[in-house]
Image (cartoon, rainbow, N blue to C red; front, side, top):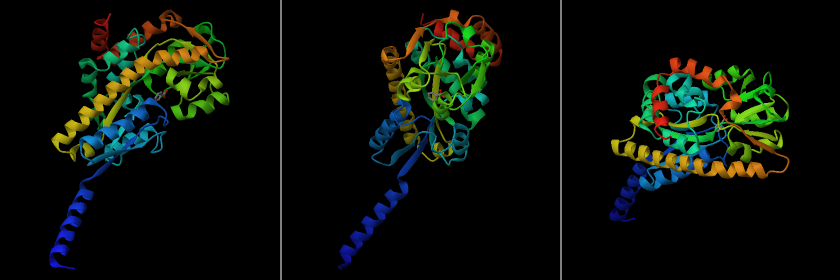
Length: 325
Ligand code: BEZ
């Protein structure tokens, strides 16, 4: 081999080697299954990031809690073992009480207002508390629609639910609301819900229409109460270690693209919730009733009394939401 050819090959190998060192496959964990909107949008974010960074950054999405539950993922994010996650507020709101304010019953009138509120300065002020209190960086909010109820038995009034085992997401604001309703609130993560309904471990669940449709919860709980009683935000977070390893320009790109994809998720949610609700109405053997705040009686006011003290940011979210009416 000539000297020139050897030098050329060595230079090429060195270039490829340094590219391999620099390229970074970010691990993003979530608990939603592959067909869920959060998982689909996370994959699209990966494609956008790869294109915007000429392949330097890619995203490997781990759905269905493959990397552990949200508490475990949060720990991995803190140490840098996990780069990113799309999370419910279950874990983070335990440490950021102001995040509980998002679960105020009927804070917004509909899903379009929910999407708008999650893009407001009032909402982003709460996100800024994440690094100090949780040790992760918040990039923005998504949503899994509004909360509804889905039961194995027919429900005419909230009295029918009293004493029944109702699955809730495991965190304080939703637990408090269901305790005020007098139900036997049963905390349970999403991946356990179908089996729990099927084997009678719970009688009803608090859920969104997307999961009712896609995970076929109505096969085992055919009664749907479209109550739209609170929103269910998601928070996109990144490990501080991963963040610190990025240049300012790369941080800006990741931040911008994540927000763009979250906005698209929020818009999809607002549009599709109407279609998913209609699909449930048309499902054979499924009953659907629409209810409003009156269904829940005094529990709503009692919740506000308690949480306005626990989450001072509730006031600014209420002011923001009031400006949409
Ligand atoms: C739930 O636990 O109900 C849930 C979690 C993630 C996305 C949607 C719903």
